[in-house]
Image 1 (cartoon, rainbow, N blue to C red):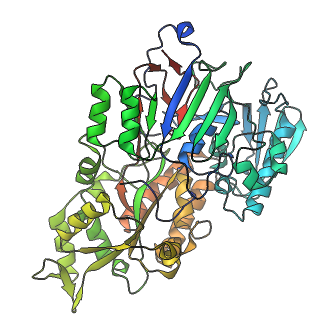
Image 2 (tube, helix red, strand yellow):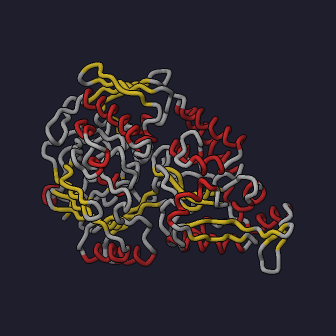
Image 3 (cartoon, rainbow, N blue to C red):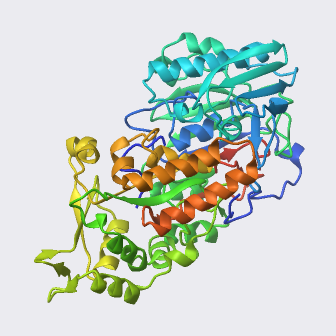
Length: 543
């Protein structure tokens, strides 16, 4: 099963499944300095291949970007805390409308230009222009909600201005999408920038070239001295070059790792239990960390006339879904069960596991009480109508079929409908579904609003149909409480209440924790994940 949304959602202090430090044995760094690291990724985006930081949502591209373009701040993968990087310090105004950053004065872009306050302010101008040019389609649009511009106080001081408070903005400054690049790139069209043309960062590697769907190559940058304090090595990269290629077949990617043809196998889906066993038996390692943000989640169409408009059926659905069996059947015995609307590595995550406990008898009692009687065929019916839930899919997969089997045990028929290309673009707007699935990767809980808050959602139809008007108003109120404050304790409280509310009202149905697993050669050392569960190369060496 691929963690791929049916709808492209702009698409994000968490539980790490393996030590984020990875293969921590460093050995003799001098002996290992240099060399070429080869990384095999899942295929490049077939419809929107892009390597420009502000525009791209493709996880693999963002992982590459992290290593050639630095950000104002960094985020600790363990605590979620925001720490200095290009900015030495910052202040947030009491009203939450101004963010003042004091910059380092020793940073340059890979082309030698100074990275100063004016360059940062020009980036802000470029982001805003790109939002307009792409009509909000650029993924970075969701990171700059309310941003109106930036002004320069002195060569090392820049002030960002917001039209309304946005507590997610500080975290946004740590992401790849708001990485700082040479502002000259914004003179080019968004399409040109996607090819890598004119895109120059300040990172420890330089973007040598990007050939969409074929390969991306990074080369070491000489003179780099301003790495984040979250890396052991804050200076020049220890590798000379990194080559990323794109391999469609999981088995081929695994085979290349085991044979030594590649050094890192980075799948989109977790490895199959068989492939994971092959990797570890070969002496290589599997590193793992949950991707932060919205878990793989089902969202119901609660509009009148749809079965999930009935809260009793929605609550029965929780008890009918066996999350633990779902996880272990698809991804192996040690794979974690989902615990709520957010993956466990998301700041302010709150476990809702008790409310998601598998209880088929309880589901049956709820449906009995609601008047849904079991028929001879094992499917419940009421007033002559069967209890059928329509789940449209672009492609059938084992996860959907397993869910179908689980729901059938309590008398619910899950109808898996194959979508045509045309239907996949319109079914949400037309409301031609009872349930659908999506997610959002970001190490901030504000990510969920871009799915379920109609004011900012990428699919207003999905957001509007996922909850009744009164429920939507409460969701919006909780987001407002969390986002329009400079008090972290208030944000945490509001996000906790939001997670409770979504489950108590039966508005989101978490299906799977999204875990990024990576096969790493025994010759590779210093592997680490960023807070976004991307690849961080600062400390990586290769025998």
